[in-house]
Image 1 (tube, rainbow, N blue to C red):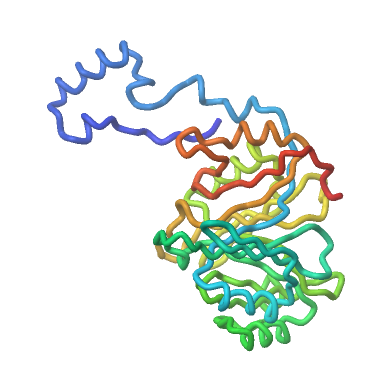
Image 2 (image 1 turned 90 degrees about the vertical axis):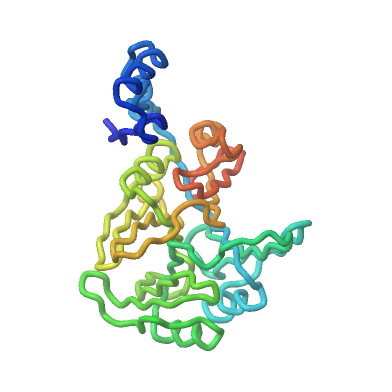
Length: 296
């Protein structure tokens, strides 16, 4: 059974006299204390009663401040190719893909042109590339405008790994672990204010499978993928433990998905409040409306 947070009503938080507050609660809730304190027993086992669905992550959309600065970092520095360009009334979108990838994996960079102020430099996630030569890729990344913050080195339990930042300070991970010898986009990471709740959401409501849990001295993460070890772009759920206070809510990030039962996934992830499909922290979910065979 999932944990629930005890939520005190507004009249209690504002310092009403306790007898008056309790009387008001009884009148309001018909003596049902589970309603007064926001604990609806009918919702307790909602996720436990859901039938299994299976989905696959196929892409990531990311808001950037300046395409002219960001595009060379991913194209020239990280070896991706432009596969689509779209201009709308409020944005310019450039979609990239690694030319040699074992699965469908796209990265869409979005520069907004609507004049609305957006904070695009506090994304608590990361973007992960696999490569056969981490040093060479880190050098290309730096020459294209990226900043290498931790040069590739042998990390105990993790192999050869390096880190950097793109022009919007998005964390880039370069891992020397490429079975094919190619360089390709391997995983996309998003922040999670509550890591276990996020894991349960993506398992029960989206249809991903937990593949691995990792803990570092800066963050904990769940690596999510497709069922039955079907090769696919991984989704990394990250919660920072280094004492920082990242902005987990409503970042300009979107996770693209296909599913065997997209209609069901849309229903399970739809937010009535925001009028869209999204996760618990407001990361948008873009779900292809055609049923798909995973791994195809």
